[in-house]
Image 1: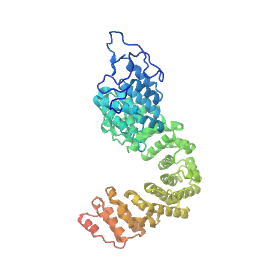
Image 2: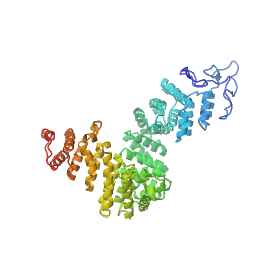
Image 3: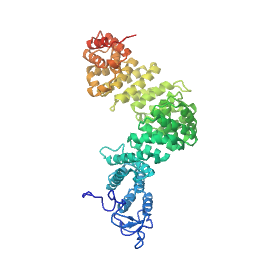
Image 4: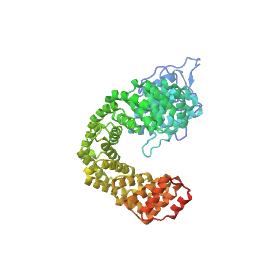
Length: 583
């Protein structure tokens, strides 16, 4: 309230023997059904006259039965929506951490993946008071509540997705509550069982909230008990550590052993999350991949499109394969192709081709979709780039033959994106360009005019946004144009006319010496020269020559010579002073 005290009817200050308030006189006996009764209505009987031993004193001086803590938790557990939870909170508050954890769990279940409900709860003073009370009690005494309650409270808060709030929404209270829970959990991590460890890790990863000390403690506690983890707990823990980028190889190896021993009890989501976590952390584990392959093949009809896309992407990223699994999953993907998002579909198709297991039915279905203009425009530039690579790599493998009509549809759709009002952006455009280059190298002779039109549109589109490129993407795009043999006049003109804008000061720390070297090599190869612009690129390289290898230095010197003897005293002086011993 405006006076600074807790609203009437709930939430006492730290130091009160309870956190309830505003209850009418007497004790509590029978538990009312949720939503029944009126505010202030009283249930049960008062304590026996002259004998109130063991009864709990409330903030308003009344006494309640010690059983009321359990009865109150049963009330919260029966809540079905926000109104039920807040009605009980306003009438009775909370007696302990169990009550608060149950209330947050019920709220989290009600708002999960519903932005409108989440907004209603976040906007309420009751929700803010619950979080404030939780933080105060845990800050005063980390042992105030147990491991299960901490895990449940974190799990309930994670359902609000505080790591990805709508623009302008204040989630500082939720983040502060998670941080307080994390510190309290770290202190008593040895009291957590495997399910609670898994739930705690999942909650913080879902909320994108990093707590290094907590995750280090979870890893230390989980490793000796890895054999006790169930499939869901294994996959959720691995997923959480990979999601936040936490480096814990001993934990991953221990849980991998546990996964292989319990793999017959895995469901599709468990398989997908487990393999995805190893791919995300770039941790090879061939034995695990081979053990999970038959499990995924057996469960293939049960896979959701997202789990299927994640699993195949993970195998391809780890450079692992399992033909039986890919054949079974390919049948499912071909039947459910229209349920995939464009990104998931392109990732899946790329994974099949990259692993040497292209699925003809899936590739032909995608080709037909590209021929349908309405469906083709659902694809993004990066998805089109991956499709191009997939077509090129799959042709002639596993009985698949590339249909010229599908190539034509892909090129026309790519040209539409490049020349249309949406255009292409830096990294997406570079990825699409590299994919088209791969496809041209495979079958460019069949469609010379289409490829020429497509690259011309890409040249114009990328020239318009050249100052938005990161240095690495700029160098990749330059190399791609060189590989095609297309001179890209607009793209290179914009680089040479404004090299300092392309390599702006705020990006200088991101520049590696190889990036200006690649651009210089591309301009030399395609015979593009602008005195001041080319000289500026040489200066940018010279400033980083100490980090360049001998091959990069020689490449820049050769580029300068090829550009008509471009002189750079700074470059030649730096090479002379470097003391390099060239082979």
